[in-house]
Length: 424
Image (tube, rainbow, N blue to C red; front, side):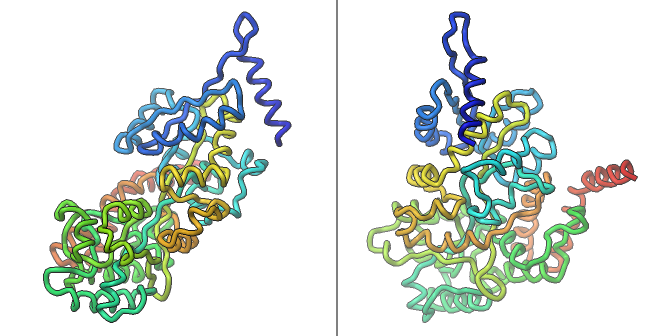
């Protein structure tokens, strides 16, 4: 593999000479989103040292503009060679045939080992049995909680299933009184609802992802459990904008449980008072009958179909996928690595706050891999927020949600029917 890579680079560099016979710089364009766009150039210095004559041109793209920019660049044939892409966008750009299948290169790679990746994260990159991206970092949700408040409420350990979670929340609420709550889950978010649904072991969409499946008994039960926290006064019917900030409110005891992601480990360390630093911890998300699944979020690295340098672009992806490079990336960004081997470094292995994330990542599950998923979760957010405020039953909520999802998927059903007719 190494010999082949050297030969490929040699051919590329031979083709990139000017009239005087001197090698020109071969540029690889890489779009990275948000904070990652600031951090990754530091890592790429080593890649450029290993590959003299290659320069990686990084363009930082704000997350708020990333999806639209990628679509605009696709329409204008102006995509880069490599890009960071949110996992839930992979299916959309695969359907557009904008990104390359990586199966052949990944299968012959000496760096990429599928069995080393957390399976739920790897699965987000497989569309119709083809691999279209490689996980770069992972993002999932679990519980941050106040150890001291749980202890004062008579709870000896964090909950491990739904029954224990509701019991613990009830005990905490009784302890903290009328003006405080057990759980804060912003009503304008959708992560908890998706996680609870994924835990039920049934598809969120049915009939080949043609229709919503939230009216199924299992997903109605998930919605009912979610709404119960609000019905019983265990969680405030509020969005994040309705409170000063989550760190101050967590510190003063306004809520004890908070569903959030790994970036808040650093924020809690920086923002919580010194006398509370030993009083908070993280715990795996409870499931219906034991430790439960959570969402398989994060970002992946993709190679675009139009790239004139696919082999070299994939070498860049391989470089960023090395365990030692992923450990450096974690040290710079706090983003959790998608490979088990990358977790063996001292920094991750010795951090008690990330231990629950390591356990949770073995249980993450991908969302439905349809291009319409981003629209669907926004409808899920809006419908469940209405349900909280208008006190809909879980059945009413599921019926409204499925109705909206079915409308979103109408074009998908038409296209699939048309494809089936053409094949017959």
